[in-house]
Image (tube, rainbow over all chains, first blue to last red; front, side, top):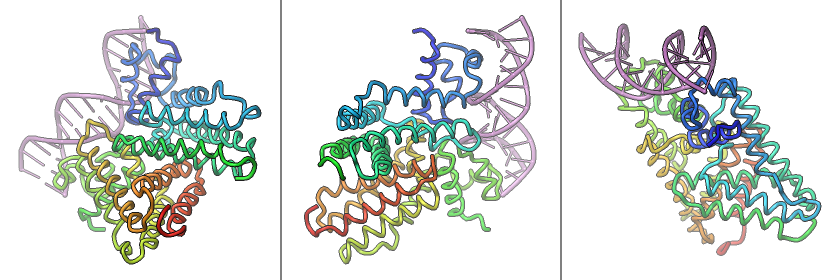
Length: 182
Length: 182
DNA sequence: CCTACCGATCGGTAGG
DNA sequence: CCTACCGATCGGTAGG
């Protein structure tokens, strides 16, 4: 297992997802990637600097290779929604949400990265809905993401994935109702 | 300001809500309530033991004095939903969600308390819907809570409360559609 | 990329 | 209810 930059970022992501910003330690990350802690600091200037890397990688993975909305916006929407739901189902929690709750004004760079991540994701979703002529695409995108994120609560507290499945199914139905309005 | 047990619990709640389980320190709590840290340990045996106290107080406050569902289930439902939404609007985040993401198997008592809290709240909501003859009350209750919780993401990242308002309004509409089914 | 260290802070306790 | 302390761990750095 080579210790690439990308490897460090994905391992940092797993730690942030599981333990949050405070709970993830640079020592844990070092052990995980097979380095000494000091060596991490030759790649990343600080713990905080990992957050933008983690989130931009996540955004990239979430939207890469998505069907062109101009060609088939329904397919693009369903693929994106199901991809997000699948990640939550596999990982049990959302890194972004854990970081959103975990970063404070003490780490402004991380805080800004979290805001930008969710804003970009929402905008990506809204753009697809806009092609489909869906009413108030920004609101529908935000609410859809909120429903998916909120469903992770039940996965964490009780292992129940049915709320996530309903959220995914309901979101996909947006793309199977009548064309044009609503 | 007297340093009552209840005072300590509500201050602990504010710290947990803002900083999460790891991020909230017993020293901060002690300073906040005007005691030395060691003195906290004469009231509570551990940091972990504060979690059940915080959540049972929160559950109590959330459901106390609610209209009797048998008398007017629509009013009971709307009051409960709006009460939850109001708390999120005022406090900007949900203690329960922050704790759900923040506690691990390293603090099993806290973890169990979080699960019980959300299960009890969902059951309370479902019981009201059951009186109203709403279809699949457990699922509707879980999804409603998920939508409200998820909306806090947008409050945190961008200050946008419109998603929370839509969640609250949509939930309340459950109680204004036709009696009986759905 | 390492060893070795820094000051700060953590949850918790001894002892009065 | 306090002072004073415990060992552990934190993010980060010096110096090679």
